[in-house]
Image 1 (tube, rainbow, N blue to C red):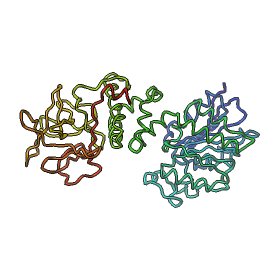
Image 2 (tube, helix red, strand yellow; image 1 turned 60 degrees about the vertical axis):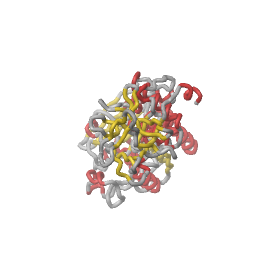
Image 3 (tube, helix red, strand yellow; image 1 turned 90 degrees about the horizontal axis):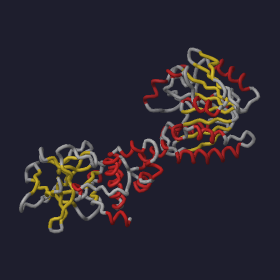
Image 4 (cartoon, one colour; image 1 turned 90 degrees about the vertical axis):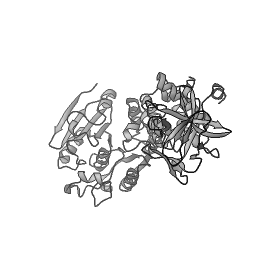
Length: 450
């Protein structure tokens, strides 16, 4: 294995060097927010050491996008270390900018830039306001120009990130030769969807210094394969598509491959997310999937095992659950005699889950406690809601004509749940954000037959 040393330590910039066994040299540029660690680490350091790559790691002590007079000396050092060797420059975000900007002067054969920007200077482009803190007058000429670039430049970005999408195309337009590689569900931190010793190894194996076309074909295919299997990418996909593609997300959540991955418990514990997926499944009339998902969440909350094979539907939920469009569950508070919304399946102390019972064939809201079912009755001209006992019937109904549907009072007024989980009956007409999904209790024969 090679060793690591610091070749240069200036006021702005640090140059690390790891002597490895490969014929090519990787020159990396660290991204933003690692300035305090500039002397201690560099982009890809543990992986370069593990795989014994020859790597020059350039870091910056300032948030300056590597726009520094010290880069003259840094480039001189790099060229002396890479003479006669093939060169790959590589960096994320700010480091991706530098990997492209200095590719010509570093005599790069290939460039791999993750979500780079061609410039952050305000006269070159429009960026979110928080970028103004980084802009300095000496950055005026920082924009990437065709003459700055050399080699085949691969720009990896997430198309759904509006700023990154714009910057990727603008950066590509300013390169002599470039290839855009979309990395879906990566977000801005593209490296999180590609990171890993084996992943980086397989990416580096794609670079064919004799054939750019082969490199492009292999690299594009490999990056897509890596990101699809990467846990960070899968989690990003779950959060991004939970509402729009609930059936797809259901399949991921229920798969053994995902449940056995690190951080899967973080997802299962996010009841806002899980409630939202349950709501959207019901919204698309995929009731059995919603039932199985809630049952699996029960299993997870009780035994920390996310499994659809555990029939753990709680007895006090035998009238099903009502879920708001925000992914929260509806409960009855006997102290305040009101409805409220809170986390799915985690009944707040003293409150009673609300489900659906039938009175003369009409579905009405009921509260469930210790196996007992109480219809809910709202007094006229009063905000109070009571538990109906004896002959008194409930008067808060669930509209049966669509799924998910709406809850309404007998005398008029629709139930609406605000994002703050406050519930009232003041709505005079129904809106999408006031929809309520009813998910009936799961029976063993239904799950076995699904």
